[in-house]
Length: 467
Image 1 (cartoon, rainbow, N blue to C red):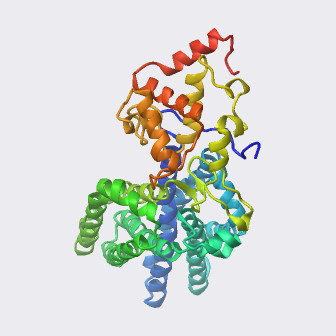
Image 2: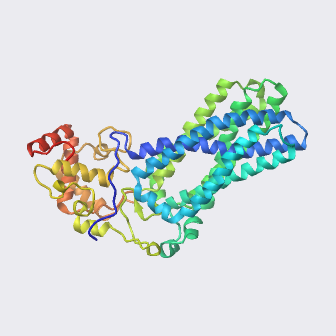
Image 3: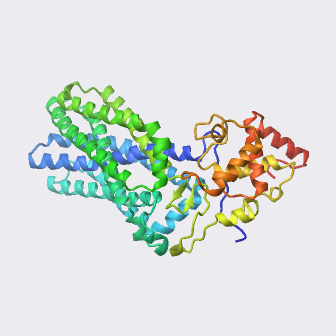
């Protein structure tokens, strides 16, 4: 193995690549979950309107539909490609692994998505222009297409957690990847949460209805759906926890639950009380209060769930065979994929990574700091920030701002070298590279201006900007 199939490093100082993906992803999840959940609410409301001859419900559906077009489909259409751009530059090998497993699944998802987008426009603009039964059929087609997009994406997201079965590593089969151990629990969790979000968004629209009887009817239909979906979500979350790999349980117990457990319980109770209040007092539901509750549920509810799901995969980014730092962790016979950790331990990243500048492939006294910074970005920056005090699990704080190079090197040669930290990748580097990384972090922790020092070293060596 003369060279690894690695890509240039994408790193945003202080924020890190993971926060870029996370921020875009949370916005997208709120928009997409609202659209899928609203699709089923439309179908239920229109069925009720058709069966009970209540055409006034169609007014709400049209109003909600216009809101959905702006809130979900415009925001979702912007953030969806944004996620693709972000993950492609931040985790190119992870994206490649997913495409090689799920290219036809994604193709099918786009078919459903096309039906969904056309369906929501047709649903809104054909109300009152075609017969009621035909419009009802259109609405249910839209709902099923919306849920179909989520079902297919959940299969891919669940595989990112882990296949769950050893068979996929032997066969490389799309079926073994898609119908993984985590799939059904994750699908139920997403389905429940989408109905909760859609109900809360629906209450925003309902709060603006002037007709009192219509407002009471709509609110008292939405609130029980949200309550029931919330209880179902909790049950599926407990089931979901039983389908996670051991590294995810360790991450939950050590880091995530102490941080988010109380918040998640609080938001469940708070949302339930809000929906109960809305059911009992639909006419007291003001637009400002409904919008505030939507923001609270979206931020305090969706962010912890997404942050936990992303963090629980660590140290892997895909299928428990690609580390977060893009290194292939193990062989996958069914795909002809070979593990790279041992090769890196033997030859080093400086010799195997194709995007190392030629002048940095050999460590010298003049470039040791720059080499250490580059290696830290390659090995660590996909999950960690490199600056002290940065919000994304910054390494200087994790090292307790230690300035002892030997102490830092001992950590790198201990738990990381042997892979004994369950939520950290095995990073086994040759001794000179370990010392360069340790020197870099010792310098950062000492409070010195690393960038200025690197620029001075480059200037003293006659290296111009961009080399």
